[in-house]
Image 1 (cartoon, rainbow, N blue to C red):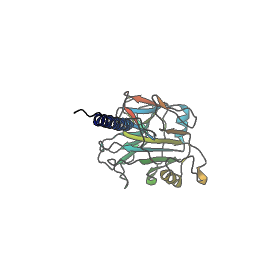
Image 2: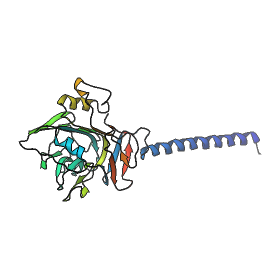
Image 3: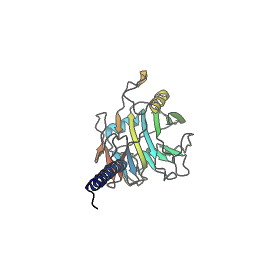
Length: 275
């Protein structure tokens, strides 16, 4: 016999169950959207091996790198490609050579190579390096006259007193996540990075070892934590804290944007960062 009370209760239960399923489906969809490139908080830019950043060469950049300078960058490699020589940062010259370069080592997963004035000074195997691990690493090069130092995760791993050093980039571009490999100026970009880039900084002076270590310990606090000798700001800084489609601005106001080059759709944004 038909019971209207039981039928009403059954109908209410069905509606209630359906409502719960809709709510759960909504939250599941939103969480997946956050994983595919729309994080709530952006801390780094991802490169998938088909794109790179380009800072156009100019006389000011050439002048900075012809004297004392420091360059810092934070990166995390794609764990699926630990043994490929991929470019982290590269600055060429008018003939197509490499004046300054950081490269992921291609012989094993714990190697990094440095290039200065077209000479490869490496590879090195820092104790804290394993490209297969999802870990951000600080990489830094400093120059003071003819003395060049390489740092990894805050610690000096190599030091060279070069009798003759002539860094002359001319109008060669500065690349982040790529390298020029063809004869001529700014020709044949390849060796693209796969992984994340958190921040890039450029100074027109030589950082001290205490400053490099301080930055490693406070990677995202450059303007919040200061030592006495750290009052001189960088002359170039490129952060990755917001989604961009065309370029990453130079936040020092010196007018050197990092243009996004390469295949469309081959970059992404991540909540992961160095800090």
